Image 1 (cartoon, rainbow, N blue to C red):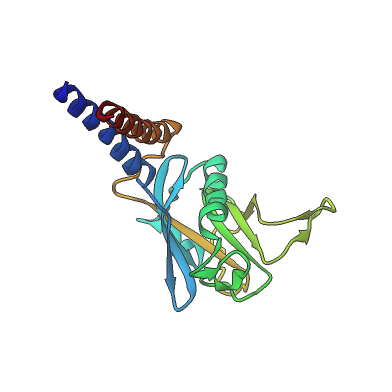
Image 2 (image 1 turned 60 degrees about the horizontal axis):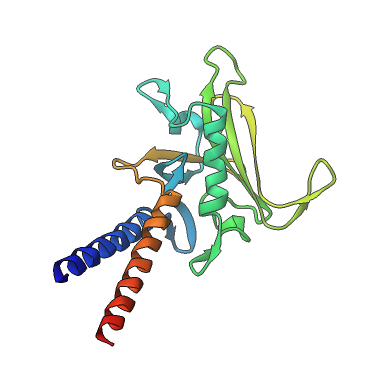
Amino acid sequence: MFRFKLLLSSICISFLFVGLFCSSAFSTTLVIEDGNLLGATDVVVNGVSYDVTFEDESAADLYIVNGEYTFPFTTEDEALAASQALLDLVFLDGDNGRFDSDPELTNGITYSGYAYVYTPYDIDIDGVLGIYFAYALNYKDMHLDSHGNYSDDTTGINFNIKTYDTSTLYGQVWAVWSPNAAPSPTPEPGTFLLLGAGLIGLAGLKRKMNFNKA
């Protein structure tokens, strides 16, 4: 009987620790310097963890590697998902700064009204208007959109010349993404079931032991 209780206790504790580990397997961390948001680490996009920095330069300077444009995201859907991740996980108000309410705190942004953050995904080598990108648009306040509705932050798709330079523009920067060497797994509902099973199991075991003592 003692061995059975010991085994049951070990199983419950294992469930508990596995649940805790998985639920905290990743956590987006903002990179802040002198109150300015330079980027973030562990930004999860489609189940993969990325680091991102916000850069105010020419697209050619940022994305040409060995003579060719290179992008971590290569489809419109992927770039849109990355842009949405910025709005959901990075541009937030918190103890470290009001990075949602004050877009000007984002590195490279010198306008208080909004910040366009571009994530490129494709290039037209032969064309002049050749770089395609998704954008995360972080507004300071609710605004009236083209449909006559008040809305907050949003994402979208745009294009421009391949050498598009944001350093001369006050409200636009590029997002430079790099996948982590060891991507963190995305927690699934099963993670929370494991955590709950461990807690319930420990509670039940304690109640049974108390009942036997009585």
